Image 1 (spheres, rainbow, N blue to C red):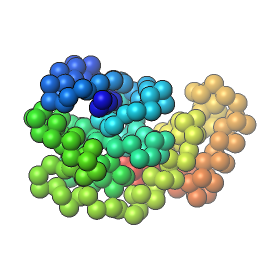
Image 2: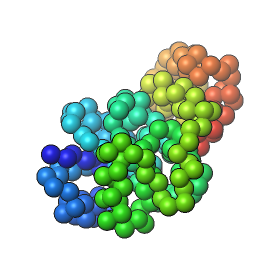
Image 3: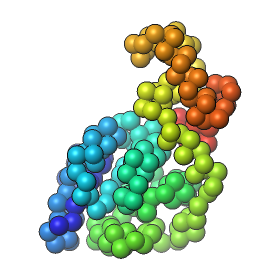
Image 4: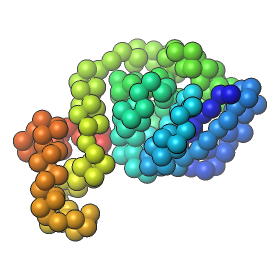
Length: 210
């Protein structure tokens, strides 16, 4: 049996994709998720997925964070990004981070099916004319690895730092003490290899996490 996970927060798109792909694969099972949290939970509960179709803009994803998290937590699991954001910059970043393919949401379903079959064979799939973006960007990969080392709570803290919040405001927002916030910030600086809030925020900007 072939098993896919469609991770997208638009139920109509998920259902349309399920209906379109099901006749094109023999013995296919498709599961669904609508956020980064539910995607991680579903992947942990089911170890037999052949491929994940991942949207970049689900709740919790923060642009490329969802892709970074899935690739970090489930190494070896092929991930195809399926997104309406199909600029050359997005495609380049997605491939540099380790996705096995990029599929625009405007792609015909029979082409999507062929793309998924190619990815499951171990190949890279990109829209026609974008083959050059399969090469790796070392700077992007290094930053992604650093960000992937943050815990979910630490990432929430660094996001609030990015919003310009003070420690007191972060503590109130996350319902934790200021001492805990300071401990998180110290750990964040150590993991990211930075010394200031500004440097931490600039690292996130390099991944277009805003």
